[in-house]
Image (cartoon, rainbow, N blue to C red; front, side, top):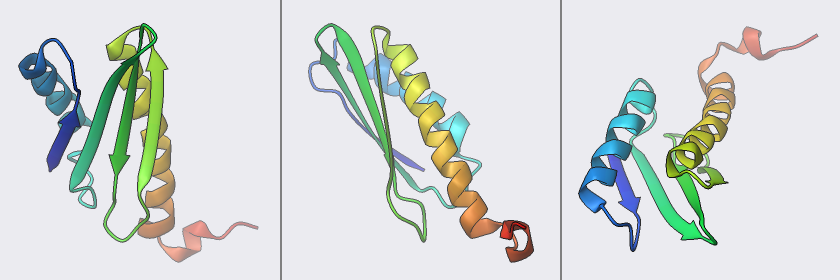
Length: 103
């Protein structure tokens, strides 16, 4: 899986890159339909804004963003938002049709 991180002006690029890659790989490597994760980190008015973008194989682009005073909390919030989208994607594309029918 490829992880692309954009964090202009971040004080410690190497440490941040390693931390994000480890966290995102541990979270998303189990999904064979995810090949790329794009991350953007920005500091806005004293808070961190972390956004994730994933283009799953055979689906529309998924996007999640969170803002928090703590960069780690902003990343966790964005991951949590992305996880719910990934679960919906899995339900739609990878469950058998009889499980998708309600009623």
